Length: 127
Image (cartoon, rainbow, N blue to C red):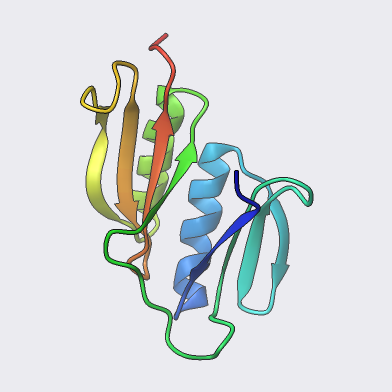
């Protein structure tokens, strides 16, 4: 459905360990690093870019905006959350079922060091 998502950062040194840890927990490879930024994913598939803004103005996060990453299973959602908390993230909703979305929905919500809200979600049955 989409080609890529870009999230801005104002402090690359603080953001870098967070993003490497959470993307590693989700199994998303580093595609390449660039000046004060990084890309995850595959060249011809969906990608995530994290770095400074293109216009040079401060990066801001959107109210009501978040990016959700698919996790292969519930332990991966848990690992994503743990990696985020250990690397400067803040809690926006710990791992757990969210049956109001659907019966197998299991997710966790965090904010990165710049305040961008992200999520890992598994849509599969437990086990």
